[in-house]
Image 1 (cartoon, rainbow, N blue to C red):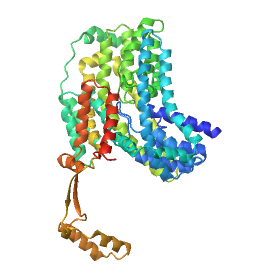
Image 2 (image 1 turned 45 degrees about the vertical axis):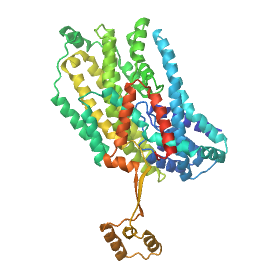
Image 3 (image 1 turned 90 degrees about the horizontal axis):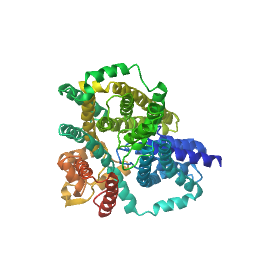
Image 4 (image 1 turned 45 degrees about the horizontal axis):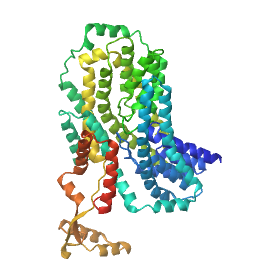
Length: 571
């Protein structure tokens, strides 16, 4: 009974973390290990978690796009491997992929459901009531946790063979099609980020990133260095004129100087805001994305500034419930700037709703363009691969390295990002006037567009196995592979035989009787990564036609299933 309760809570935690992307308890190396410890088989849990971690290195949630669900896959397969069923690690890995696809569909369903929560939050905000919004926010998180915990309990209650039979009974066209869609659904997230940053001056950086990624073998760390260099060059070459608005007049600048020593927000308020930042994604929905999370994070600030002013509290909550979507860790400097602007507004500075909104909107796209490839595309895969190398040997060092390494970086980013944003936001008028905010936005946008171009061909999977042509090779130009295999089996393959094969290859002979050209070969001969780039612009076009991201995602699922059934797409 005790182990069942513990499994329930581990599954609940993994489900919540799969949307929070904070402490990373949904990652296989942590989730499977915890299940293994609870069931008394930590080594099997470690080995399973390490193997799954390597398989899922490229899975990331970007924008509205939800990757296959590592939480349900890790928890369910770990229960089957370390629990009463005692499946082998290999069998656990085999069933993890369809479970991940099922979890992905469930997550999308919950995120769609939470749109109604966002509308309920609007009603409470207009009344200046923050507590009900907090309850809605965490209710959404609880539903995401139960999305994994309930299936985990069913797996414990049902015979293992019945579960395996149920999974195997799903038509291959469905599981295969969903796998296909899972390979390029991330393109929706890329398109949303690009759409927020897009301007005529930035498109060349997207194409440059794409070209370097598609045509070279440079890793993401090298690409990041190139992107940062381009950003620095652009900020140095671009001239930023002083803004002539009323916000930059001398009176306001003097007011800001006086405000430095008269902060309304205390150190406690800053700490409480920092502690809330890990929950920005708790009620993520497909209409205004992270809006309820931002409102939740900003509540300590609003409560301090407007303790007895219900009208201003209501106005502040309504402001924070606007659309917001960026990388959850690099939201911290935006939160810091917003805290400072709200503080100055409360002290009488001429900062209106439009100014606060424009600063948030202007920053969230560029920092997402930097944060997604930095954290999801580089740091987590590198740290995950290092940790997995220990875990697959049954060593607890793996998950320990991953947990502490990741969270030290994450917490430092949240705290110092918020601190930097608050300090700069306190001088927002002078920073807007002398172009500092423009420089930050320009630099982040340049690097963000470049890195989005890098990710499109690197992390988007689109396979086209459809055969376009099949030509029979001249038998005289085909190397006798059967003879070579027979020699290998009989241990009679000599050095001279290998030399002869090498000479035949140099003379133009081939191993295959047929020369097959697939649709994928055709696309790659034109430009490697061409179809992911085309998909990116197709999604961009749909977004600019005001098509909802969730409709695009469901459309990709349909395309994936139909394309797999017709043989156009392959896993």
